[in-house]
Amino acid sequence: MFRQSPIYQLVISLILAYCLSWIAFSNEKVFWYFYTFSVFFLMAAFFYYSKIEEDNNSIRLIFLGIMFGVLSYAGMLGAYLLLEMGPAYWTSSIHNFLSHFGPTTIWHFLLLIFIIAPGEELFWRGLIQEQLKKFMQPKYAVILSSLLFGLSFIFTGFWIGILGGFFVGIIFGILYEWKRSITAIVLAHITLLVLLFLILPFH
Image 1: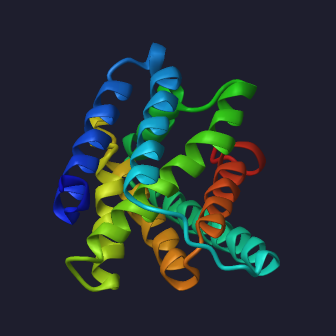
Image 2 (image 1 turned 180 degrees about the vertical axis):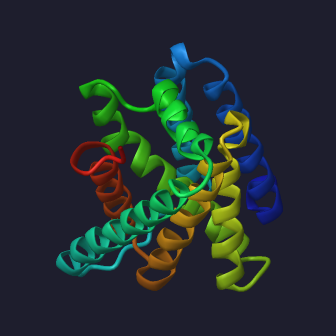
């Protein structure tokens, strides 16, 4: 009975996500281990409550995913350049956050690309955004699910990360509503991460 209740699915899923985020960000020494473990739980919630919907045009999905990932990166780069015009602690807070929780080894990048990016998209777009649409119009579901995704960084005290998560959530949420494809948003997420951390990192 409870499994079939949309509000139950939504509330339980969000409580799980925020509790796991709080625990993961509470200790940087075990962050990568526990956050990866947390994402597996979020993926399990998706597969328990939802299912994957896909557009069959794989070539187009690859192109759209990459383009939306580039768009997300461009937006974040533009925001970073604006922050550089403000007080120094704005950008220093970004570098401080990355020094504690950013990827530094090859296995960090592998986890980001093959587990964390797919898992986060399955949960926040494939499950949370879909559940919210049972209570509101899709455009509001995109906005609210993006806000909830951004707020998953609240336990870090990193307000720029919250805003960044909200922005990225909007971009990926729009793509998901448009194409109904997990593949596209996962590719967008991976493209963003590769640009952000490997090819054109902020300095």
